[in-house]
Amino acid sequence: MIAGLTVAIVALPLSMAIAIASGVTPDKGLFTAIIGGFIVSALGGSRFQIGGPAGAFIVLVAATVDRHGVDGLILATLMSGAFLIVTGYLRLGTYIKFIPYPVTVGFTAGIAVIIFASQLKELFGLNLAGKEPGDLLPKLVALGEAAGTVNFAAGAISLLTIGVITALKRWRPSWPGMLIAVCLASVAAALFGLPVETLGTRFGGIPRSLPVPALPAFTPELALAVLPNAISFALLGAIESLLSAVVADGMTGRRHRSNCELVAQGFANIGSALFGGICVTGTIARTATNVRAGAYSPISGMLHSAFLLVFMLVAAPLASYIPLAALAGVLAIVAWNMIEKEAFRALIRSSRGDAVVLLVTFALVIFRDLTEGIVVGFALGAILFIDRMAKSVALEAHEPFAVDDVADAANGDHTDYNVRTATDPDTVVYRLTGAFFFGAASTVGTILDRIADQRRNFILDCSAVPLLDSTAANVIEASARKAERAGVRFFITGTSPSVRRMLRAHGVRPPHVAYAATIEDAKALLRSSAPGKSRQK
Image (cartoon, rainbow, N blue to C red):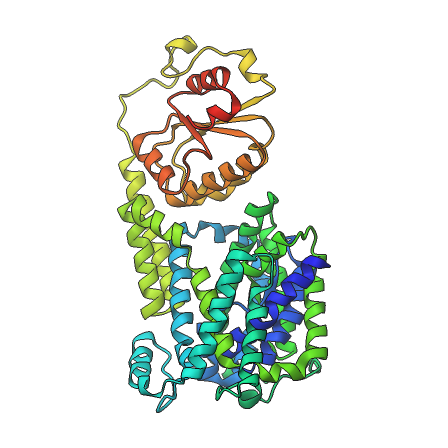
């Protein structure tokens, strides 16, 4: 209950802010979080997933409303739900993992930039001469032309909101910073009579009850027109939801069921559409909040929806006083947090190929189209992988079908079998063989998570790994952090200079792990060093 209440407090202002930024009324964001969020938690494949409206959908939803109206948006949402159900039952969710890590980082960062740019008008209270353009560059031009209409009261409210959220995150991270900031901004605007737009002045507030469920308006022509939007919703919803579930896995050590999660997301989108809501997906920030608040079952997610319903029924009249500039400040913080800054820097430093994939995806999302960014980024990632695999091929002399048996000690780097090593109760040794890239990262990550906390010492031998990409490095980094939390000493042995450079670029470095030349060297360090010292080797 405490976890559900905590998430509901975070979701309340965020759901309304995302809905407004998407070009619909704030109540649709609440309907989405209440109905869609409940279904995601009740049926989903992750214990901790929190569903609702997400910032990643703002651009797509706003474009759909602009072209096809709210009726077209709701129909596209329902259709995307059907696509997600089919995707889950066909077990295609397994293939979402093949999207390379640089693509997801560049995609998320690009969306964050677009979200921030979409809030500049409300942050500064600007009055545009015409309709705000959707594309980034025309939008910035229009906003620059309207710079003379800045509302300093709105700017002050925005700064107050951002400042309070930032300060509370630093000094009181357990407090609901977004809700406190929005409440303070609303009180300040009301007390001082500031000339700023509020939910009441623009939208007339929010209703005090859920609407009666109804099928959206349907015609074959409208369905055909919104089909590309529905496919985009389904693709983005699948990626965002499974990415959120992976984040929850990393925080808790559990494993989600990807196809079950997609089916739940499909039913959630259908349910949201029937109640007039917008697209539903797993939300990373609210899911992480759910985990940190102590959730351990889907009940917390269902209660989060119930608490949101209570808030709407009880406090709806108060919502009329919320300044739009305050909600814009909330979304500005959300956009900043969406950018995985450490991962972005690591990918830029790790290799030229990963940097190209990252930057191309980032640029296409900002200046072209979200779907185009994903498709081109994935294609570049595949080309990069093929290039790396081609460079890793070695030409060997002809060998007969069956070669003569040789002693272990004479067989390359192999050593004699040691029964004490195999039965050591404190140490487990695993060897990776072959190219470790994004296609195998999910499978290997599952195995590493299962065995990384079973012994006091874990040795991962990478002497037979010719290449390793950023997605694989990110998987090993997550396993190392999990082992560290469990008090397990994690050794990596046999890495080539290029593999070690990639690992270090992604944070796989002391004190989380220790490096050794061979398995025997790692064992020697374990025998000769105290636990506290061996981690610093």
